[in-house]
Length: 238
Length: 200
Image: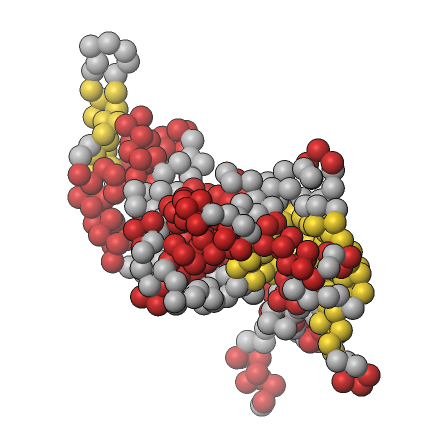
């Protein structure tokens, strides 16, 4: 479904809460979060460690189930899908990026990037062709045959971005993707996320503790103690 | 920003006229300064009064005569002094944002939280604008612009972090008691002769 023509946000969090544990030991990680990400919008969730950023990303990706509320991707309630359908939905529609790249060292760089496409049913030739294109976008095609263990940390994170881009997802969810990179490598990654929004049609949600990283977005959502306490919109929003 | 010293620097290697100076100013310092031609001519006039530059009128085959400015020995000395003395950042202790926040507390015209929120939004907007400008900059070609934008980003970041500090310490600030100014002594101060008389 095209969310532009339908007016439905790409991704919507409705009254999202997540409580870990029970009774006296219960910890509220997220409380009543409402958040819409429009098609082609780049949103940054800014908050200190422990604010609930990773919990939010896991819920939005359908990797975790909310205690209250729901997540809608292109209008579909992730909670109503079976585990198998949700996983397939995620692989097709969501590109995920974590603080560390999680590359498989038994595969080459391009095979890592091609892996989600193979899981989605592409032929090996087609998957490798698309993977090469994705590696080219992040400027790493020269490394495609390498063992990922030989990459610099910044390069490995760009391979992870290529892997997320390869499936042409509707949304890229990036949880502190620059947290372990130096400023220059972080800037390189952020410029690519900006291109994903500007040129490749992706919506992006990024979490960070760093104001400078958040400034790349169209809108900053300020999260503290599991609650959105402020929003800073910029004029770049579509 | 010292337009004065930028102009002295541009005149260091060779004399030039006002229009050329403006062009060279833009080429070396980028398009980021909002410097109008009038400002250049006014600064040149001031530099001439101070004896740091002088000019000669050069007749043109076509068009009006041109004033060509050159650095005087005093101008060279001033430039040397400027380069070798650190910039005085004393104005940081008279920071407008600090003044606004403290006066906001003293007057209570607007709640401190509202002032903070408005400032934060403004600083974040500026940071966003400069960040996107930096992202579009060609990193291999345009090192001067990159350096200028980095400076702007670092200062904005510092202001934002400082604003958070202010927010964290807001309750302590609200509880702070500002001492009353000393009452002004009346009449003229006593002369030493008066004191002596009083003693006798």
